Length: 99
Image (tube, rainbow, N blue to C red):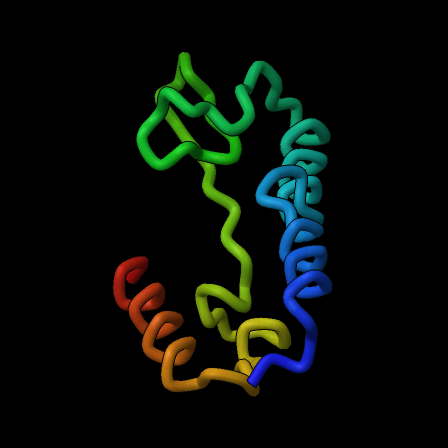
């Protein structure tokens, strides 16, 4: 059972961003410091809509969130408390697809 009313849940979900997340900004900052420039962001015309794409080099970087992909770190090891019957198989599927 959701503890939030539909209006508040909707506001929370709207606040979750797919672009310019903190991990993505960290990767972009590291790329700039290493001297890599000339990349495109969030190319809709590219397969998988990569977060960062070097078109001339034919390279792409996808920045994945630790929680959604079950990484072996503090955020990735955290498990959802609600609807585990839905989320745990979904996260396991993400892990199997990536590895």
